[in-house]
Amino acid sequence: MITSRGEATKARILEAALNEFAEFGFAGARVDRIAAAAGCNKNLIYVHFGNKEALFTAVIEHNTARIIEALPFTPDDLPDYAARAFDFATANPASMRLVAWFALESGLENPASRVQAVAQQKQQIGLAQQRGTVTSAFPPGFLLTALLVLAAGWSAGSPFGSAMDPDAPEDHDTLRELIAAAIARLCQP
Image (cartoon, rainbow, N blue to C red):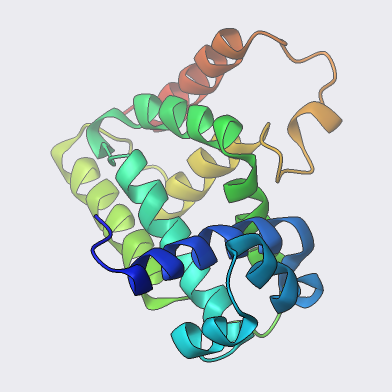
């Protein structure tokens, strides 16, 4: 919940910056466009975030937090998680384009919150493997990566999906079921 005018401004800046970075990447994004979209003075961006790179990092952290909140991780039911991740990816194209731009930008540090979230998910998969609910044929990091790549493969930020498989089912629910079934087979103990 936003409790102050400053927090409201910061939230508007983060949302405007997410859209700007998703559209143009770090290098192409312009702070003046972010300020205009947020309805604030350009100087306020520097007051709240310091510089463009710190703003980008804050946007990545904010986006990561939104994804984690929207997608509770279920290591004992990875097919369901993949289906929900697919739904999120297709419903949030700006979020997925931002993730794609982040992967393409060289020299930008992976925010600690993102590193920690991935480490926790890999650890949870490892524990599910120990319980015998997920195959131990593959390392946890490989399973998590395969799941997320498949789930996001038809999103706006992916060069795959529709571009490589024009015959893919156009029905969202059918594609969702296929992704869940593929992850079920991959993760089957």
